[in-house]
Amino acid sequence: MASTSAALVNGLGSSAFLNGGKNAQILLSAPIAARTAVSPKRFAVAAAAAPKKSWIPGVRGGGNFIDPEWLDGSLPGDYGFDPLGLGKDPAFLKWYREAELIHGRWAMVAVVGIFVGQAWSGIPWFEAGAAPGAVAPFSFGSLLGTQLLLMGWVESKRWVDFFNPESQSVEWATPWSRTAENFANATGEQGYPGGKFFDPLGFAGTLKNGVYIPDTEKLERLKLAEIKHARLAMVAMLIFYFEAGQGKTPLGALGL
Image (cartoon, rainbow, N blue to C red; front, side, top):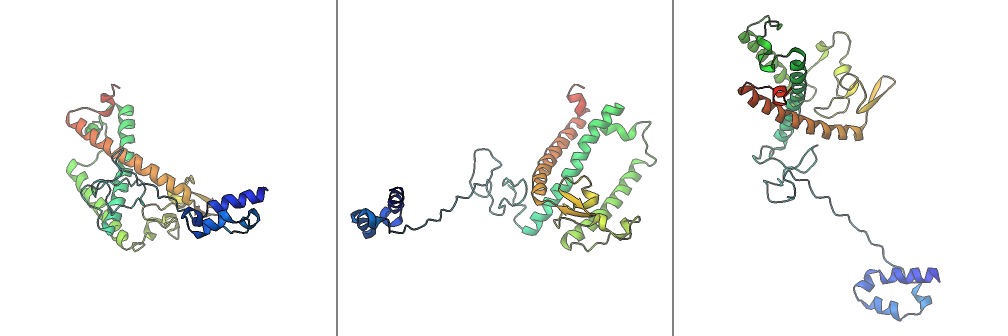
């Protein structure tokens, strides 16, 4: 009886019955025993794709300003924000993402340094270089020129390596090792080298027999967390600059 009822329910749920065709009439008019012989068709239900997240809460569409077609959600932290259309070119979209990542990492280090430095010395971050006890053997002009020269050289190397991956040798950068394995890209993804040197605590991988094995799931979670913190740090640095223009410091704004 149970099998007969199950067969009848399956038959009623078939496309023939739902479409009201002849097969449905035959199914209802046939004896119970005959109905058990009807083989129901199987349905393949396609799950609806999850809507893309929007940078404007509560808005999920509205043209390229809200949901640009060149942003498909594949990048970590992609919420469709590109009002100027800077990422229309796929090559430059990749470059802008790496630039965002690099600037965000510097901003995170700077925010921590500003808070810790002022809490330790009591000197505002924008006056630290001019303090009597500061270690500054060069004048401001010499220091700026040296920084521009060195950073310009490093950035030019990064630019070339970005468009021609692994074209820039780093053998010279590891005098303590015969190879450049410490600086090799263990994940195979631009901007996320991983490995024993860049991930010594194994947050996004494990070290087995001296070989670094990346964990894709952990890496994806860390990518999203990093880009969120990087953006927050860049906004914080922008606020710090405005405060510095008024002679204020982050700790002073907090009443500390």
